Structures are given as structure tokens and as C-alpha cells.
Length: 422
Image 1 (tube, rainbow, N blue to C red):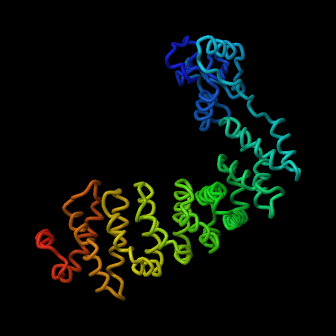
Image 2: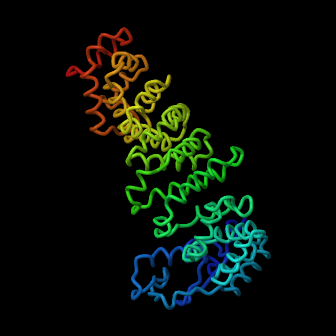
Image 3: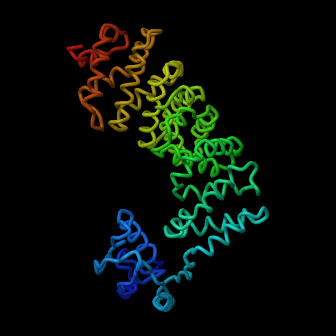
């Protein structure tokens, strides 16, 4: 709503029936009801996704009348928009600018022609980025143009880009779009290689391109129909640059995307070993030491557990890190049930390795891990504890009871709480 409109009562016909806010870009359906463009476009296209071509595309949210695909047109209500703008001016309410007309086929084709020219590619892509960010309708139109997707991909898949910065603009646009499955399947490896190159050459003082590149990697790896052979063939270089994004804390969004890239690759082939080789274990341990967000901590614990369960070298790296065991124990409680289960699974793996078991088990007592395992059984925490996590904790306490009960670090209070069955 325009500034000041909440203190001035607006005429009801100025308000969108969906948002109940003053309309900035009023449009009218064939049913005769007027809505804010953004609101009704979201309504129409969200309800038409599952309908067949013969069925009504959607219904009017006010009259509940069916609207056929052939009638699914929205008409700008310029008269009402000018009336609203005049009313806002007379009441001292901040006026809003005349909205930009929606993107159409002819305009998109013109922008794409400009983007193919070496000297105008960057300016054309900046214009397209602004237009795509305007509305969901514009996004859908660009997604439906194969030539647009191909051009955006070629802007950073080609090396070097036609104009400096055009690859970054293209990635920013693609992050707002859904790349067609066909394109992903056909160009999966080439796109990943190009994104890896972008991450490798991006400067630390320019975080946005790195964030966009890793976000695109995440969206590619989430496609369900990618052949297993391609997923097992992910390159070491890709993991190197993704772990670099984690290490540099580019942004919270980029960190989450990088974690999801590693998570998506770990189950396939020797990808877990590649991530470990890239230094992921040490980076995750150090990130967990001071990460304030619970959701991020949960994702880090899950990925750390995957790296250690999928690669023996991962466990060695965790044990070898000065804060490895301590941070797993620290994050075992007060994060989430999933993080707790991942932490307990990690500790079980750590305490079961053949080499250095006695030293590791003693470290677990020194770092307070044993007391936290006991508290899990007593359900002394801020999150719900899954039964599977309790059972693993009970198993560890039973297995190492002789060492832990006789440890000089155990307090009388903790010894009294130690489960009798252990």
C-alpha cells in the first residue's frame, strides 16, 4: 500500500479483493472484477498448472466463475489507475509511478536480438533482468522462450563472455527462472563446468556472481532425471570452488546453496571423498563454531555426517581437527532433532574407529560429550529427541562404560546419572 494510505480510508473499489490493498496496477478479468495485476496473476497461474487443455484454466476468486484458457486475458484498467493516482495526490498519499507494461513476445524478441550483439549484450541483459524481476508473468514468458534460455546460458558457457559482466547478469536472470528439464539434461555437464569456471575466476570482493553460480548449481543438482553416471562424474574442481564459497561465507543464501550442492552430490560415487579432499570437513567444523542460525547448523551437521559416513578420510579429518569432537558435542543439543541424530551418528562412528579409539573416547569425556549423551537419555534439552538417537546414545554409553565410568574427568553427579544398564 502507498505510504500514508493506512491512515486515510480508501474507497473500497480502490482495493484489490485479494490483498485488500490499494491497487497500483489494476487489471480486469473477463468476469468484470478488477484486481491488482500481481495478485491475480499469481492466483490464475497457480490454479491453472494442473488443469488440462480442455478444462477451465482457473476460476475468478470473487465470482467463482470458470475462466477458459481461450478467455484467460487480463485487461489494464487505465481509468481506475488514473483515478486512484488522482485520489492519492489529493489526499497527500504518496503517488506511485505508472506501472511498466508487461513483457510481450515482440519486446522479448527485440531484447534478445540486442543481447546477441557484442556491444549491447550487457545493457540488454540488464534490461531483461529488470523486466523479469517485475512480475511472475514476465518470468513465465521468458521461460517459455527456448531462445531466451539458450542465450542466457551461452552468456556464461561461452568463454570469455562477449562483454565483461554479461555472464554475471545472465546468471542473475537464470536464478529467477526455472531452466527447462530438457536443457538441463542435454547440457548438465557443460553448465556445471562453466559455473565452476565462473566461481574460480570471481573475485572475493564481488560476492553476487559467486552466490548466483552456486545457486544455479543447486538447482541443477535438484533435477530428478539426471542420469546416475553424470552425478557420479562430478569433478573435483566443482567441489573445490563450492567449498571455497562455504569457507568465505559469501552470504547466508550462498552458504545454504553450497551445503545443498555437497548434500546432493554425496550419495553418488566418490563425491563425498572429493568434498573431503576439498577441505569441507575443516570448513564445516569452523563454521559450526560460531554459526548463529539453527537451520544452517542443522544443514551443516547433516552434511558433515554424510562426509564422514561416506569416506573414512572424513572421520580422520574430523578427529584431527582440534575442535572437531567438541563442536559435534556442542551442536548435539539445542538445534533440531535431525541435527541431534546426525551428531550422535557421527560420535558413534568416531568412537568405533580402530585406530586411536582409546584416545578419542577419552577426548569425548574431556569435551563434555558423555554428559550430553546422558542428558539425551534423560531428555534434558530444548528439542524433541528421536528414539533412534536415544538408542545410539545408549549403545555408546554401554560400549564405553568401563572407560568413561573410571575416567578422572567424570564428576560424582555424572557418575550417579550414568545409566545402570550401561
